[in-house]
Image 1 (cartoon, rainbow, N blue to C red):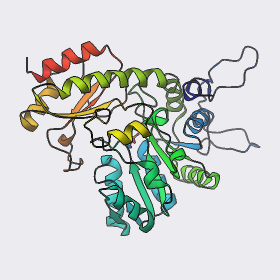
Image 2 (tube, helix red, strand yellow):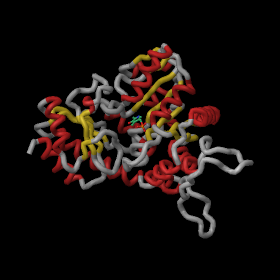
Image 3 (tube, protein in one colour):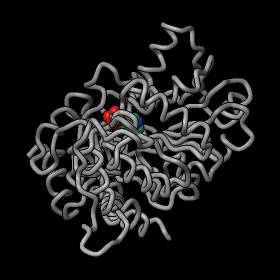
Length: 359
Ligand SMILES: *Cc1c(COP(=O)(O)O)cnc(C)c1O
C-alpha cells in the first residue's frame, strides 16, 4: 500500500459483521488478569492502533508517548550518549533538554555547521541529533549523506516533514522521533509524541522505558491523533500548495526583507530538499522590513491567521519566534514563522498583506 492509503487504512479493527469501522475509545486502567498487558500504563488499545499506523508510515516499529518531548527524553535516556552532535538551531525544547544534560551529566554537545563536520561527528560522537527541515529556521540537512556509514546512533526529528514527505529510516537513520501534536494529528487539539525504529530490541527498550516512567498517552489523545492522521495526505498537500504560492509572493513583496522556504530555488538547501522530500513542508519563515517591532506588529494585526505558537494544524498560525527566551539567538529577532493551513490561499494572502502593509 502507498502512504496515502496507509494513513486511511492502517490501525483499523478486524472487519467482522456489525463491528464499527473505527475502534471505540477504550477508557480503562485496570484490565482483567491473565493477559499479556495487565495494566494500561504498559499498553493500551488506542495507542497500539496509532502505533500500527505510524510504524507502517515510517517503515519501523512505533512507540507512542504522552508528548513529543516525552519521546525525545526517552530516546536520550535509552541511548544514554556521552556525546551528541545537534544542529546549531533546532527545536527549542530539544536544545533545552540537551543543554540540561550538559549541566547535569557532563554530556559533550557539539554543533556541526556543514556536511564535512557532520560526517566527522558521525565517527566521533555517540549520537547525532538531526532535524530537517529545522524548527524554526528551515535549514536542510542531507540525511542520507550524514546517516549512512555513521558510527553514531542517528536520530531524526521528522516532525516538520512527516513520513509522507520524508522517511529517515530508509535514508539510513536508526531512530525517528515525532511531535504528533503537529501535522500528524493536524487539528491543534492534542499533545502526543512517537519514536519509530527498525530495531525490535530498541523498540522494546522504549516500551519498557515508557511503562516504567509512565509516559503513555491517554486513550482519547491516541484516538484523536489516529482520526486526524486519516486526512494527513490531503491536508499536507493542500497546505504545501498554499505555502508554495505564499512563499513566492512574500519573496517578491517590497515590505519583506527575506523569505526562507526550502521550496524556493534560492534556499541554500533547495536541491537537497527537492531530492530528499516528496513534498515541501507548509512552514515558511520571513523577515518583514522594519525590525522586530514591525514583525511583532504584523503578528498582532492578522485576523484570519491566528497569532499562536505551535504549528501543523488545519488553521494557519504565525508568531515571531524570538519572543520566546528559550529560542536560539541564532534565529533573527525579526523572523516570523508561518504555519500554513488549508484555507483558501487568497484569503490567507489578503489577510497577511493587510497586516504587513499596516492597514
Ligand atoms: C513541537 C515540537 C516538538 C515537541 O513536541 P511536543 O508534542 O510539543 O512535546 C519536538 N520537535 C519539533 C520539531 C517540534 O516542532
